[in-house]
Length: 145
Image (cartoon, rainbow, N blue to C red; front, side):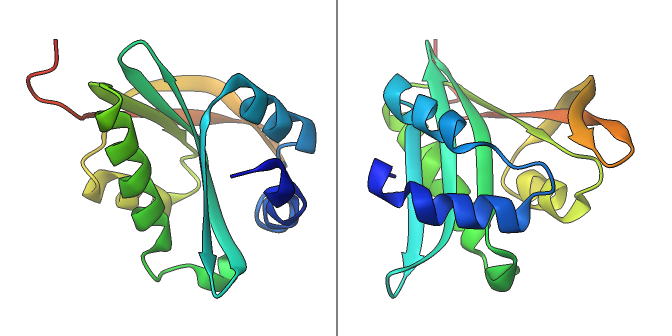
């Protein structure tokens, strides 16, 4: 992802999330050097992912595929690509948060090797106030020390 992608990223972010990130958050992630990947099909932006790597841990912060392109494997493709990138940098573990109200996403993460390791109370903003987050983790390098 580049700064030149942000206008299109914001369109997807706002179309697909009830409580979207701001453009400023994406800009801050770019400035901080987070790993950010876009997915395009025939030049059309269909998804993106933002991942922070610190020490030997990766944290998937935002993974979005436009609703129009759901259920085609693109989210899993992005996730796998980002995790491979994290592994190449030496990350031994990957973490993410998922909304309990998104069971299909949770199933995708589980199929990708993530397991539930905790719960963050009132983590997400929701239409009814706050929603918990399921914390999920995956070991990337079995022998990582």
